[in-house]
Length: 209
Length: 199
Image (cartoon, rainbow over all chains, first blue to last red):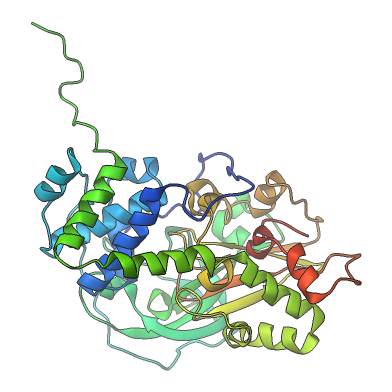
């Protein structure tokens, strides 16, 4: 989905605010958020794709105004409610106030020919990222869709998140790293001497003839 | 009639502490969350995972060319030689900085990060400012963060959007020839292994 999480290349977020020393967990509730997230994974038995999509479905203003561990707890709560483990009303009663969950509407599962372990592409192949802007979860960032690059490394097959996130099960497909020049991605705004390597499922790629 | 300009707005969310406690209490009551087990896992994150592990990998590569070769050829296996591996580190690729190439790691879609070698990511790595700019203007971003690269150095940005996680192998700083492997590991910083710093 072209969601608020897909920030690669966006302007306007300002300077990176780095602090020299940072504890692993700044506050106790962040530690609890990690614990709750791990427990949710164990209860619902769903993979990272479902969890990430739960974050991506957050109301955009909420996503941008909350920290990463709040994203985690919002996705965990959403998944638990959708799985019927609890309800939003019950969570709000216990929290003593509104408990915003992610939006419903989990997208649809794309048609995929089926599992495949043999790679279609080889290092050096010229490829183009399909441009299809799916409504559901994907790991093809918007900033590379429609762009041309070169396969530089083949990686292990992995379950296609676009299917797994929507309850479609596990469909392993090859993954690879694709090199894009900054000029290809950003046109005249891209600098010489900069290259961006993005790891992509072959499902996202087509031959660039 | 009283003026209530904000009456149409939704009430603000309950404090985040109250929300996380609400989920936790549901899970505990249903027997779905074992506090002792979770505490052990959280402590593992706090004490066993972190950049001190990645620093050992880098120091070994600096002193042992054979290890460096294996590390660049198969990061996962070479890192496992030092006892590090597991979730978010099952598919490791190590990218080497040289005088002509500088590497930078980001996850634009979320916050993927090599947990076994670097631990959990710092806040700035997860924030939109870093994630948006690292792929758009990496050289300018690095300069803003205090790392000025020579103009002819190629910048390679690695967006870890699938299963692979990346570790940058920084260049060994000049003047460290006399240091032991253990002393060298103390020179290696987290930020140099993400690529936002040069040693």
